[in-house]
Structure formats: C-alpha cells, structure tokens
Image 1 (cartoon, rainbow, N blue to C red):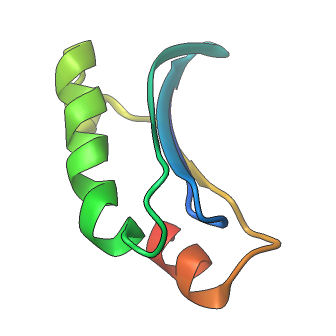
Image 2: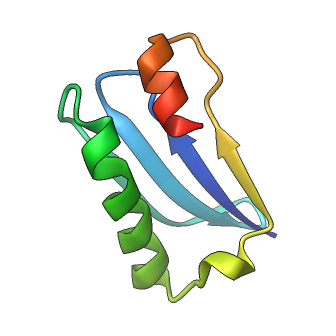
Image 3: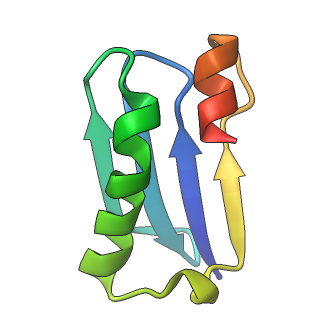
Length: 76
C-alpha cells in the first residue's frame, strides 16, 4: 500500500512516500511560512524520484494537529 504523508503543522514541513510501512522517499523543508509555495513541488519531487504515479497512491495521510490553522489547512 502506497501512502503519501504530509505534515505542515510546524515551521518545518515534511512530505514522505511510504509503501507497506517503509519510507521510500521523504523531504523536509525548514522554511518558515512557505508551506503553500513549496509543498506541492516537494510532493511532485518525491513521487518523480520514486517513479510513482499519483494514481498509484492508495491513501494520503495528513497531520491533524496541533499546529497553526493555516499550516494544517495547507496540508489538507
């Protein structure tokens, strides 16, 4: 099962791709208040680097808090 994981609850954001509980690829961004600009390109990068088409994803997991409302909203 391939799952895209997104965490935008803090100043550092993260995206990862997992398969059967193992991390295939991940990226962390330590750029305060740029989640809305950098998260989508980061997700595209880890999917491309892993050779995974978005259609292959079976689930997307996002952090639901605690964190700033705007940060959490961007992840969702």
